[in-house]
Length: 290
Image (cartoon, rainbow, N blue to C red):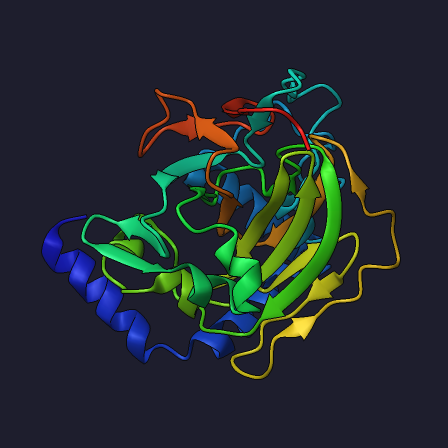
């Protein structure tokens, strides 16, 4: 995409009725009429070159609607989860937007743009302070990717908070041009306790992401404004093993990992634009477990 088209694409998003459009896409994606859902799936697969080899069910026959296909399960054994006790694995299939070290409270979004850790977490200052100068990784899920999110390490889910917000696209063009994109968009913040201390997995909503779902929260539909909700997580076991399902995007988006300073390092060859697969090691814990 050349610069003129990029600026036009980003500028157009500011005037789009983003929440209304996302609601329309959500409705279409949940149509259960066989002809319509088959048409949508059969057009989507070649358009985005979706790899169907690992899909558990028959496409399109076994899917009740387009959204069911979008959040499809994979065949057993389709993703090998790194079992090394020290490894941190990718929670998703996706592309690394950026991974590195926070500069105090500042997280790099893209070249020339950053945003505040405290704004991203939108929560008690003490919760955010533990990640000052810590490690972060931002991974983008393209339309063709597998869209389920898995645990990057063992831990215990201690809290989940939904933050209402905007719904800008999270593709590379928008990330590079909309300041503070990830702290502006809606998000679900999952706080975990690990043997190395606290950690956070952030589900970032986006344009056309009709909802975010987890086994603990159920489906969460987008809200443009309102208070931060502490979501009840008491309905399921909160103990999590590496590779366990954390949730899924109903249409695609971005995941951000946060860990404190001194507890881990990312792989030395992990760089911007790298493709990663769920279960693949992207880093290692350092030091002794608590």
